[in-house]
Image (cartoon, rainbow, N blue to C red; front, side):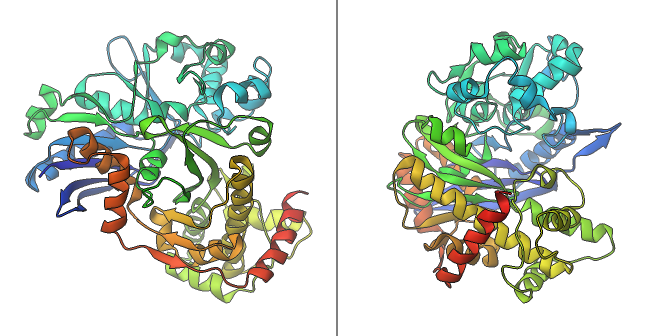
Length: 488
């Protein structure tokens, strides 16, 4: 029986989990968990990358003590990267995608590459945090940093390099950059020239599921393990999660629900046209040369950051407390667009919600419960808006929405999503990203035959909870009010 070690990094924590195919089911055993705490220094927000690499090594040691493993796969958030110099060392600590350095960079990029042309090449949703705009900010503001760099490695590829010494770029994580030509599956010379970056900055590209290299001798000696292979799973956590949607026929709509909500479907080829540009929807590379056609939506971040704000004010609410207070508050009191730029940056989210409601002439939510109700219902309404757009772009109807990831534990949001979208929601698995990571490793080793087999196994291995839509007429009326508010 193959045992594989999956490292799954989120924006606030990371985990090391051993996965195995046992009796027709994929079993997961967590061996290490750690926080992922960004650090602000002199106004710049950094990832604590060396600390995270220390935690990877701790996870390897603990996995060895828990019975060992046969391969390693790493998935992380998208867009961010480390720069490696000619000696193989980090040029500087990688910078967090929520750092302010990309402010105004979208407009700056459009001076050399018009919006329509950039989307036509990349098929990627415009977000200020995208790698293309991070690199443009470096070229404009700190060109000496780029000049010192020999290679750029996206976060999962950086960790893979630190473990093996081999530099590669896994395809799914590369597509989050908005630097890939969606038609050729290669770096876009037009985009690179437009931002002043040389193609030689990038490591060779490999498809998801590629064996990168064995663990280096140094890592083996330090951790006391054998030189097992590191496999380039879908490095972007969203794409790992999509491989675990429990729908073997591949015809599904999904929400990968966590700090971000990724709402979309899986399609064989990208869809890039005037409508998808207008909606600002993305075409990311997926496992087996598929396309994750999806919209990035600010998700549980609004709840997480609100909780952090209230804790800083001396009010220590649990997530269960916040859900209960939202349930007790009146429905449809006010709405916000969850993707407002001012709601993406860290800080006083409750205060910004109140300011937006005041500015748009709505009832201003005063209590904690009223703020939370506003956030919950606004997320559900945004899901409905995206669901309609998804059906329009693909010319397909979706009778059910699969919610996967940590957000499946938020029963209130799952129910509101069913209510707003008017179709059943099937919630689960919670551990979709890890299951996808494990499944790709097991496919790569020959333990599982195909992605369809993996999805069948995952569907059988996990409990799926269904939420039927309720009060759909009331929600339809409220949705009209939501659209009026967010269009102001």
